[in-house]
Image (cartoon, rainbow, N blue to C red):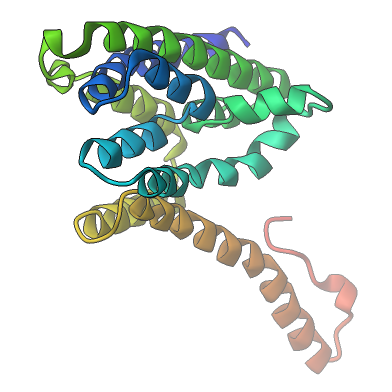
Length: 244
């Protein structure tokens, strides 16, 4: 469990610091401090928040900004089926868990082998990112544009590096590597031509599609084996499922 907590703290620090960029850019885009803090507290999805201020700062309508942010945030809905069996919460805690279900908490939680470590990883990461993201959002909003372009400090790279370091050990087999490579290609090739958020969803769809096809393989293999043995007059009981 201590390893999960260490991962959670490191990811929370890297991601939380990036909140400075959001706070500063949000104020520059025309939102005041209170509006900026409301986005971080309620929306609490970095990608969606940046998408919102991107549209708002470029003169887009409030409806367009909300629609763009919602599109980017759709990926969080995909995390629910992964997270729910790990944390097993009921009642009001489900609302809290839903608020803390983000990229980082899902990644840290699902990376653990032990159920207790998975729960610790999820809650520590979610709570840590929430607290630090909002704290540094306030710092960035108060500083505003006096510190220059916040993106030049490379905080976005630090957050991405921490996330990559967490995911990298899971790419230990060729199937995972192939899926990751295909998702990267899809995301990079569609980013210049599709609206913000769509490339992320398409990249996620690659993994979903591979997962569906992969899960269907054992059933298909068993069916073929049964048909083959029946044609030879063999007993169906001799058929074994792959990997057993």
